[in-house]
Amino acid sequence: MSPDDGDERLRRWRLALGGAPDAEGTGYGLSGDAVAVDAALGALYDNAGDGTPVQRGAGLGASAPRVARWLGDIRKYFPSTVVQVMQADAIERLNLTRLLLEPEMLDAVEPDVHLVGTLLSLNRVMPDKSKRAARKVVAKVVAELERRVAQPTRTALSGALNRAARTSRPRHHNIDWDKTIRANLKHYQVEHRTVVPERLIGYGRRAQSVQRDIVLCVDQSGSMAASVVYSGVFAAVLASMRSLKTSLVVFDTAVVDLTDRLADPVDVLFGTQLGGGTDINRAIAYGQQLITRPRDTIFVLISDLYEGGVRDEMLRRVAAMTASGVQVITLLALSDEGAPDYDHENAAALAALGVPAFACTPDVFPELMAAAIERRDLRSIIERTKS
Image (tube, rainbow, N blue to C red; front, side, top):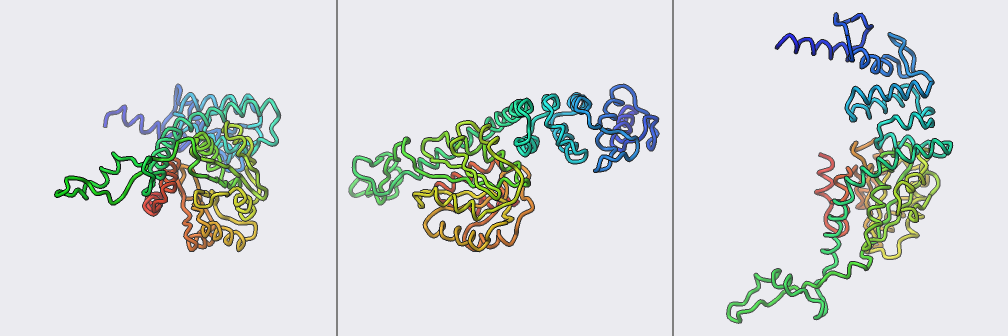
């Protein structure tokens, strides 16, 4: 190891462990940009969780300009992925939620899904000038998420809809002879020099017709913040497909139907109100009213399943939906974080009804919905999400 390598290692240890500027604890003194990096780290991590100084007495204080400068510093010295972690830690450790109502602070943040969740929880108390700045932050994150998920979703679901639309008993003028012959080549009769088709394949229904109804029923309690953001974006993408009729319902102890806002996912997200209790039974009861074609309906409940309403009635409603032909899917989360804390008893009860509950990442969601449209077995996808 070269002397420069050893020096860099000491510098990193000094920054990670903290200490006074005169090299307390490591024997290594900082200089140049490293001093500013150390100050940015110390402002956040040299405090107890309640903001009480532990060593240096550093802190972000209650001043929005000071916080905005700190946010500028960490964006200067750290990559965006690290900045997002530090922002989330600052909001939690130093109770900066109130300062997120300041436009100058919102202009300085690095937008990400978790920050959007925090802003949405504050949108009812934001002054108008802050709300305008917050919308810019949310719009930037939504645009990035749409770039990530829109095309894979449309591609996967369009293919699934085309396959699901084919019929094995088409009328003569609707027979797709090319696909029928290919599917029946094994039935070629040598003596007759022809194919005797065992199964006729028809053309799919016209793309303009609605083939599936999708109801997304999303828990907007505080623990589901990231899932609410992704659900809003996916709902907007699904609503843009003419072969699908998409409804979006969000709930806590009340139920809000956001279907009429699906043309603009930013409007969708600002129509939510993160926090509060949970009444899953009431939300499912509302969702049932939206179902007019049970066998062509996919009902997706996105919730950690902590029920504050009537549990037995909730389970009866789910059982009634599945018995009528509705395909019910329960997602404990729709986010990149994996399985959250959830009610294991309710998850087991739903599984007993044939409705397994599992966490799903945004990258897997298009495949999951495609499989649901084709009514394929979901077990392989579920197992992959658990691995």
